Length: 122
Length: 503
Image (cartoon, rainbow over all chains, first blue to last red; front, side, top):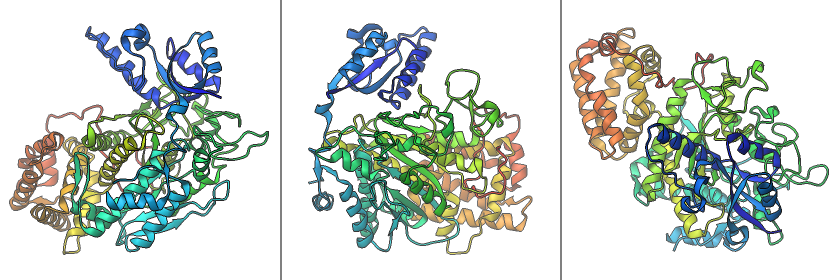
């Protein structure tokens, strides 16, 4: 089954938290960065500064995704069916890449002897 | 040419055996009491030479989540480089960060570093198998009903029954917490490490990804003012797990929070020095709270049972992908190594380590008493808040800089003498203060602005103590000053105490 690395945007924190009930493969660690970005943005708004939030690796470009930069997010690994379900439920999903293109567990593996040669020669 | 690919589970195991066989004087192989679910032997190594009653211990964990390929490679690479550098008497350089040969020597000879690089060997084997799943996260427990796996980092005994950020469904692809806390042999092995080596006072569980350095707690927002609002208090059951609300926030002693933030900042700087990636240092709760994680469990043990060590535990989330191309993985391994060596320095106590460098027997027991008394004064709290920065600067240089070591040892011996002569009101003679000033001057001559700033504060304070007793000096230095509300004194780093005044 094909899976995709995605970033899921929710309208608010409560809606983002509700994603926990879907049983999806979501990476909770990425919400720490999201929370910090939200905090910084809130502080910037408070001081009337022009806020500029950088999306993370593979994230939504601010110019093309507009208001997404104001929304809490979480990264995950989802099938097309799961993505469709989220979109129907009101989430916005940015597809970053086909998971197969990032899978290196089988293709970039070496035995210890080769590893040792590399470490000793490094 | 450096390694070109990820090690297999067998490769990680071979590496540990190789290190123990090649460097028997400093690397000891530890076979953990239980095999993994699929029967694989699990091993760790202990790096260190020499003994002594006050050796601190650091535990490094990796590979709990199978698809996160870099952390086990990073930990065995770190072990390899530490052994190699110590034996050859050479420095270690990671991008823009160098640790001097003397620093490596000091770490090996003063600290027990335990490395358990692969907590989930079955999972990694499955991820790397041709018929496996490259994105598998859990262990390989066959659950009733046919679904496989338990999320090992939701299986520890910290608010396990709360269900916060976990799933009770064995078919959950990601966060099934198991049938009971420590239901899995892999997590029981980690618990065994903490029980079997009670000098472990620092821990980092290395994961990927997100470029984060996270400190407790993970179940809810932190607070430092109400000790009764804590994870052990059943009155708050059902109220935890909603960050941002006012119903519940998890208590963390202010002194601990200060240590986490200050020491974490040093680690973040050490990582950024490698190639400019600045990790976020944050409380782990994020927008999704959790329970049953390794860092919260390790840190919570002391609160549940004060006879156990207080373990300062972090989670390090390295890199920007689970399985980057290996060239990128090598960069992440360098960042991880740099950060973890800096953390090892943070885990050493500068006073005890300096005492070991003295040719005389220096008993620092009296100084521990004085440390507690410093906490009672405003100025003392200010000094102790600067301690992680000044201490790590001293430890990073004491191994190589003979003049600095001479000043540090001389100062320590003089202070110990003064305290022994009058334990209640030790007098700081002028020559002792002169020595302190010389030491600070040497310490301040570094590029690091944080160190320079801390040293400058202390340089402005020495005059209060010249030819006065410590209580007189503290009184003078504290006059008209308030304690900053968010910074409190670090408590004693030695945590084998019968009672904990913080709780």
